[in-house]
Structure formats: structure tokens, C-alpha cells
Length: 172
Image 1 (cartoon, rainbow, N blue to C red):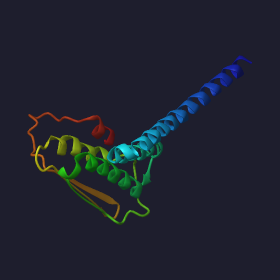
Image 2: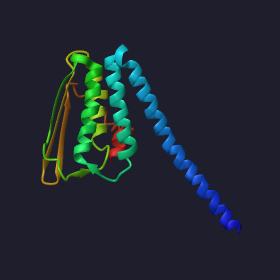
Image 3: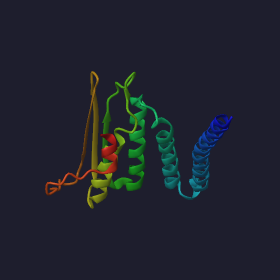
Image 4: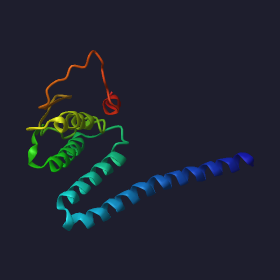
């Protein structure tokens, strides 16, 4: 009898946790949508950025939990991030992106490519005062994806230290 009561209590707590996990994203997306609506006339650029952020958060929350996602979806996420950065930089940033058209029926672990692209902007373009540029090429041969990602920042010597942020360690 006590064991049944304990199991019932644990089940109710698990259901409450699940409900909380569903309410938080729902609240977040409703709030982002309200801000988006408010900024559409006042700041069209800010409005686009809010919508892009909302799309990215939705992908991270819902697709990021899966073991694999369609490669096409992952590449759309990367392009969404690049679009946000382009809005932020205005016409001061030169970006070239070339991705393979052959993505049908291919899957990848979610959020695997984004940390590299994010780092390219964070440690590259954002530190360049003049003519920042980013070049991203993704090719697929058989079952191998090759990503070549470059920015215009000059290489920095690391004094033998191998610095690694959380994004790249999560990729590993």
C-alpha cells in the first residue's frame, strides 16, 4: 500500500515536470511572437531577428533532442543562423555559402554543424574591423560530409594551449 502511494506520487511529480517543460517553451514562443508583432512596424530588422531566433529556438528545443535529423533541416538551421548574423552586420559582412543539393535521405546528429559556424562569426568576423568575410562550403560524397569554413581573421598562435569552448566540446 505504501509502495503504491509512493509510485502514484512519483507519477504525479513526473507529469507535473512534463507539464512544466511544455509550458515554458509555450510561454517563450508566445512572448517572442508578441515582441515580433510589436516590432514589425517600429523595427522591421529587429522583427526579422526575433522571428529567426524563435525558429532557431524551436529547432533546438524540439529537433535537438532527437538522435538524428534530416540533413536538409540541419542545413536550414545553419542558414537561419547565418541570416541572423547578416542582418546584424548589415552590408558590412561578405558571406559566401555553398551547400550540397544532395541532402535527400541523409541524416545527421542535430546541432553538429552550428557550433563551428557560430565560432566562425564569434571569433572571426566579429573581431575584424574592416571587410569581415565568411566562406562556408559543405560537400557530400557517398556518406561523408565535408565542411570547409573560413573567415578573414588572421591566425593567432596559441602558445601551445589547446583552448576549446563548450560548443566544440559538445560536438565531440
